[in-house]
Length: 105
Image (tube, rainbow, N blue to C red):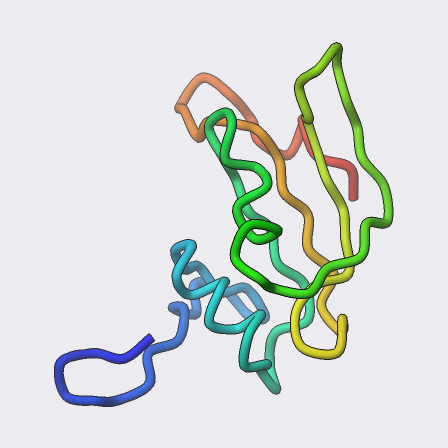
């Protein structure tokens, strides 16, 4: 991701060892690598959980949690040399939900 000054933009550091970014940040890191980031958590509303598999980013499924025909969580090795562990979860970030209750460690 490049800003208007042609500088590489990375996700924002929000806590020690925790970065927050958008889907474009995640795609950039998965495609080009990162010396600081090794795990990626992607939250999706509904049908877009397979976003990266549709973007020619290498991935290898570790496990999938399904309810009926809906994918609830997908854990995979992803990105350059499959060195990232990525979890995609079909959740909405709303005030009444504790997202940590819905995710396996």
